[in-house]
Length: 317
Ligand code: 13P
Ligand code: SF4
Image 1: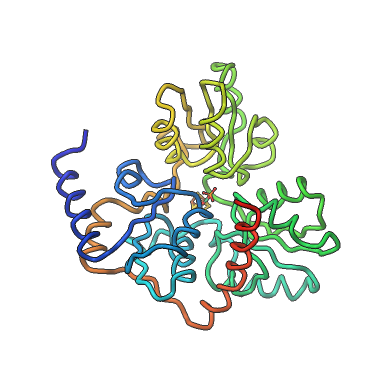
Image 2: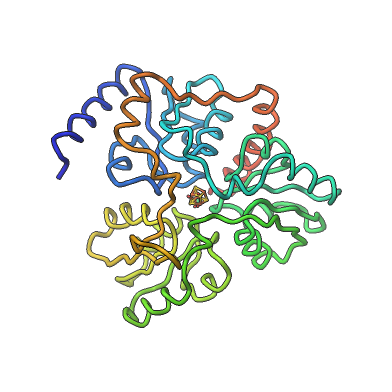
């Protein structure tokens, strides 16, 4: 049940959305109350696709900065709002444009495949973007002889390398949520719940991926729990996704995989969780904070994103 306070905020948000022809796009790692008021909830790929095709004047992004920037790049004429500009991403921060440019120059002749979890400046240095939903297919779409740089997530990069067998030089970045899962705690949970399947995001470290029954992007994990005949899952990604899993299949059991060191027992993305209903209503009211990008960077970053979207569309992803 919603509290009186949040009922009032939700009704205010709905009125402002109508008045301003605004839509709210939310990532699966947002809290359940935010996912429930969003016009669209999805993974990074689906959110980019939605940002590129909608009739709104304003897009409010309930997610992190690289996602809102991607929306701005794909919809440059729209106003794109992010309720808290501190909602960054530790993975994106692990790859600064200045260092990445140097890395590319030191390894010439390689096609630069960059994960969407990067700044607009890093995207502008890339040949093609991917998300966790399409990383394997994007790499496979390149000619077999092409040598590749993959950045910034070393776990996703190594996952793609193993799946494709391509010549990939992987940048050494990680996400603070996914690198922190404890293999020991996951195996202990599996001991206590032998029927539970271990399902994890490809940003997890290799030992965790090795014990998984299924590896996939947030939307692939959701799809798996929807279609699978099993009833219980140890979920190795940010626990916000469990809200949608419960909505799709309330009868099943979802156990958040624990991090190595935590007081709450689950592994939340501190950046994603900076967004709140209160910040959303204020952001819609004031139409700020707003995403602004340098025009040159925006145009340079747009090309590799569009290249990804064309391939995804062709493959029906
Ligand atoms: P997805 O594209 O799978 O939703 O992942 C986004 C993300 O930030 C993972 O940490
Ligand atoms: Fe970035 Fe990790 Fe948070 Fe995803 S979960 S937004 S990769 S910090």
